[in-house]
Image (cartoon, rainbow, N blue to C red; front, side):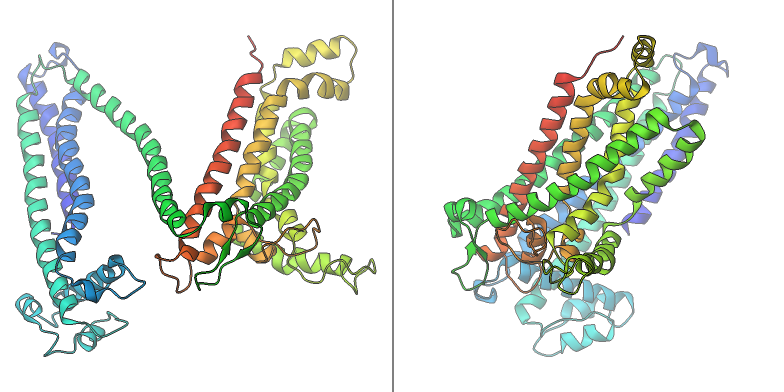
Length: 490
């Protein structure tokens, strides 16, 4: 049974349980809800939760565990010589899954029966041509070992899905029956439901934490594999980035880190003054009507996809800067030879960060109590003096935190840098030259024909882990500054 149908059955059972539980609770007190311990809605919710929680919980765990257990079992059927040199088992298992999916598609379209799919032999049948007829393209001929593994994969998957369906529906029915039996006037349904909601909220909070831990661990393990193949001293202290997939690459992060910080610095030079001045105007000078129009228009910039900003940098800002600073430009100087440069990417990234800085700063400035402004004005200060000497100092910790958060956003940007800054890793102070960043190199190293057993590919995980630590440090510093120096107002 498809998972979607299984979920619909459980949801239908939960909905039916809600009404049955509510009705049974009321009937146990002859329809007088005042004699119930809890409101009738809690009895219905208790039945629904008793159906959904165990059934969907087991369903999610089963869907996560079954593929791993099946792959571990099937991978034992693959001989070691089937794995090409420089490759790994995951790539071969991807072919096994593709063939298994193709056989399922052939059975689903009626090209094969289930028994025929299980009886296929690679020596007697052109599996690649057969699956191509049902729309499944394979890059190479299917070897007998791969076909046998794919057939075992299908068999185990079907058996697992059948068992999953039986177990999930059984748990839903058991939860339905037991909770309906408990739907009587003395049952503390409200306590049970509120405890279940508390567990749900705790699970949601834990999910975010566990996701972060999972991301860090996935990058950490691959980074360890990288440092087993490549010198850590060269990675952290070398001065050259030159991957070549020949085994003698120079893979130093410093040129990439310099480009990342340089472009981010220029972006902040654009975003911080414009965003901060916009926030001051909107919070201190603009009237309600102007603010109601200007603030949403300014924040529209935050909703534009970064690929659009990248196209804007490549097609508009870059050529415009060349027309100004190029050899034949309006200024008559030969500073810029191409549209891709640090200045191009930094300027466009700064435009992208303007709503980020302005929105956070605006909220922080508005949090300063009006009584402080009134006291300053009452002592004879002008509005501009009040802003400079009272409002901004009071909001400064929050503004600094907003700037640091914008910096971490700039450091992690990819598409604008890919299209606006170029792909050259080097040390240079010239903002009119092309450079690259850590995120750009991560994309480059993980695309193409490189395999995951080479340091030239694994370096992407070391770069990602370093970038994660850098942005995490900025975020922690921003939170520390905000909490340490935040003014407390009564």
